[in-house]
Length: 268
Ligand code: BJW
Image (cartoon, rainbow, N blue to C red; front, side):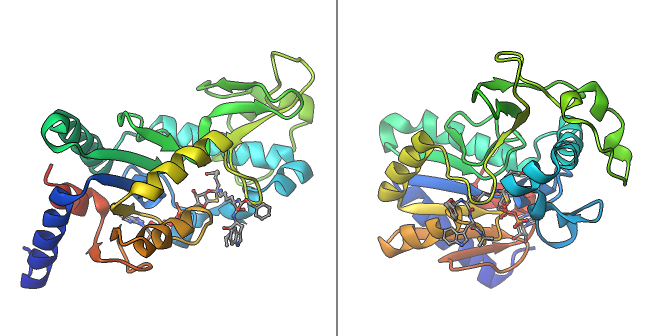
């Protein structure tokens, strides 16, 4: 049951939603939480005994490629068994609505997701700013390939249920089939790595015109995405946060699982 204050937040938000021309959704791990994909921080942020973010670095991969591949193999196997949830569906349905009304209303909508799980792939106008669990990049020749193999290398099979390092030798980890001499890595953005230049251009274009930013399930800690709220609000754009807890600045706050709050707020 909506309280008087949530009803008025919803009404005010929906007026802004109707009037906005360029709507951007910035998504984080909380969007996929209700599909069963662990978040990075809080309870879900531990894999084996490691802080998940400590493994998402070039230094970790250089020091222990087997452990980092075991971490990504575990996540690939987990995500392959999951489905998009009500929040992913709400974004897709909202995009469909915007597209169907585009002649009369001239609104635009884009989803910028920090998630690498591919669960937003039903959305057409989507940018995966931190890459994809299901792409590999050769550390020697740079070749990028889509890859949904399960397991991605025979030696990784079964490591997803173990709590111990498998210490797999490099030659048994995923290898480049193009140059035949390079170790593959997940094609994701690790700490201290820059986002892809073409993606940065799209983000810049969208942030400069965005008049409503929907911030969904992200702690707002990791840059550059953490800076997007200020970028939009400092130009007078409105910000709506969808999170299970209060995070950052917002004109509108929808506190609760985004699988529940997002369909209601977007009216889909
Ligand atoms: C729910 C929910 C439900 C739960 N419903 N909500 C200052 C300026 C610029 C850069 C920096 C800076 N200070 C430091 C930096 C560097 C660094 C950084 O930001 N560090 C911070 C820790 C401070 N940034 C970088 O290094 C970036 N590159 C860069 O800046 O290049 C320039 C540079 C070069 C050289 C040196 C320094 C800078 C790259 C960042 C790449 C991040 N990569 C990762 C891994 C991706 C691959 C993978 O997935 O394995 O991206 S780390 C991890 O964090 C992942 C996520 O996309 C990202 C954000 O996490 P997210 O999505 O917000 O998840 P959580 O878990 O934090 O939050 C979940 C939220 O959901 C919570 O709020 C819950 O409450 C909520 N929730 N269930 C709604 N049902």
